Image (cartoon, rainbow, N blue to C red; front, side, top):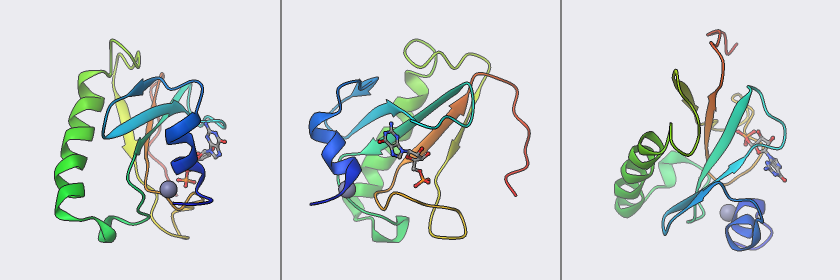
Length: 112
Ligand code: 5GP
Ligand code: ZN
């Protein structure tokens, strides 16, 4: 999609941590934890409710791949948290669905 930051990054981000045909991973520019990545599907959609059946299948593959590479590529030994912000109340700022991957320390559980 035109004018979408994460569609643009799919083509030209210089520092992808991981990439395959379905998604790519970059480091968040404003990290909220010692390790903070974004897993970004290459297909543009903003909300979970916009997913096609193919997106739903691919999402499972994406999450599974994040788990597979969590230690050897993402260095998330000790665990990690996945977050998807949806809409204003959650503070979604980029209108292209993405999964925050947070780790690198023992985290509190107080998203409010
Ligand atoms: P959201 O607020 O939509 O859940 O998440 C968007 C995330 O994208 C934020 O955590 C923000 O820091 C990150 N972000 C925004 N612009 C850029 C950028 O230009 N580069 C990178 N690496 N991350 C960005
Ligand atoms: Zn997009």
